[in-house]
Image (cartoon, rainbow, N blue to C red; front, side):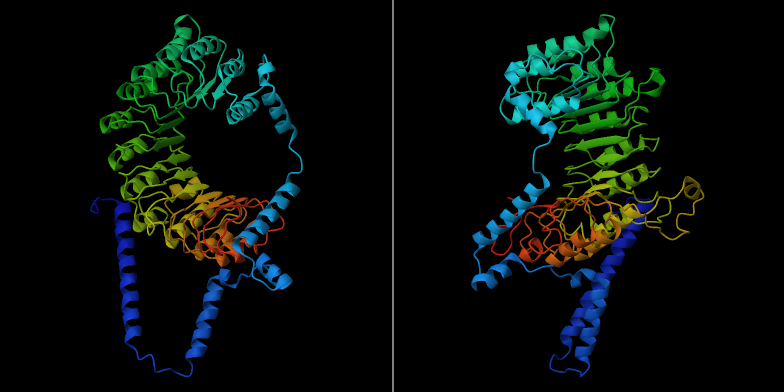
Amino acid sequence: NDNWCGPFSVARQMIAAREEARKKREEERQEEEEKENPNMRHPLDELVQQAELEKKRKANPSMTWKPNKITLEEKDQKIDGNTPNLYHKRQKRLQKQKQNQHSNRTVPSLFQTCVKFIVDNFESVESLGYTVDNTVRRAICESLVANGKMNGAAFDTLAEEGIEILEIVDCTSVTSEQMVEALSILIPAGLRALILKHAGRCFTSKAIESITKAKSNGGSVELFAISIGGAYLMKDADIAKLVAVASPTLSSIELSACPFVGLEFCNALGMYYASNVGTKGSCLLELSLQDIPLSKDNLLTLASASDAFQNLKSITLKSMDALDDEVLHKILSSITNGNLEGIDLSNNVNLTDQALSSIRRSNSNGRLRSLQLSGIKNFTAAGLETFFTFDIPGLPDPPTLRYLNLSECEFDAINKDVVNLAITASAVKRQTNKARDSGKSGSCAVEISTMGGLISLDVSGSSITDENMESLASLCHVSLKELKINFCTNISDKGLGYLVSKVKHQFNRLEIWGCAQITETFLDGHCRVDGGGLDIIGVWMAKGSRGSKQ
């Protein structure tokens, strides 16, 4: 509804009207140019065109970028006088990449060697020892899964008594009986975190009962984090019981693809995390729900869960079919302490620009650093421009983001103006509380931070241009580590070449899948071809347009 009220709505309508007026002026100017007689030329036309070109080059420095050496194709042409075929060029680039990888990593690390040796001989391992921390156990578990060696016996070895964190990346080979037996030993022994992926058949009512029994037998449940994925046998009442017994210490809850989670779980959060419960230390800091089939009534119950969410630092609500603007507004409004650092609302088809207003209002203390909005098709360019615009009366400043994902939204919604505003907002120094409280947010000039801005940016499938590469090079050159521009057809070799030439060596990953316009001019001519350290991921099946990895 375009008529919803508030300062965000008013600003959005003004920005939309401004864009419409600009488009109208451009159309009128184009019509006037078409009406002019093309045969009538002024003697100074060429000078005027040259002056305009110089002006554009000054405004857009990426236009002046050139490859720092001749491309492999040019080398081959000079050697034998023939243009090499596509396969030959591809092999040349692959050989160069392997040389760089070999020079950067001559031998495996000691840690990698030890993990490989243990996994190769895991059937002979009786115990890892309780002093082996979770970092090592997770690496061993991942390697076991990758090598097809994760089975019931391996689980028994990993889930030995005395560990504080049980993290299994793939539980498909673990039976319900094994999980019950393991938890009945680990919980009384002081297990602190339970992380189970693809929990399927193993995490059932009996597994949760083994946890609740520890408390009923006079012991304690000291879990501070649970992450359960794919537990298709876990009932709503079961997860509610788990929240009930673990709430005094449980501060992080993550559930994904658990089809029977519902109203009882939502009620349990409100019941056991409300401030008036009086349980010492009961404080929910992280909540992540993905592919959970909660109805709108369930979500409204969650939103009205007293003050249970007031201290949340991170909230993820991904692929929630019933999540809309109304529900999101109520949930974010219940996070009253202003400590929210991360929001992930990816793939929620019912969200619109109103959701952006709710997100900005929730950032009252300016602590939001990560925002994931992938796959939300109802966002408009006007709404996103408003979200990242400074000095809107009645609204906090736009967030100083370090991680931003606007991929798979509408092509025209994520345009160069939106992304430039987001980049600028990420690099602006935050005002002090005194300045913010005095209401003088618009009284001083914007000051750019020397620490940079965005660390990771994903704008795949958008209409961004080389101008955005220039903004990143100017404002985020000391911070940017990862950039994903898959299927961004308006970016050229010059834009990417200019970016790579300006950012520091912390920039190590660039994704360009579907960018047919990117050619060997950039892939073989950017300044880090020989030095390595930059992984360019992406390939396009077209002549003259190849990525460096497949």
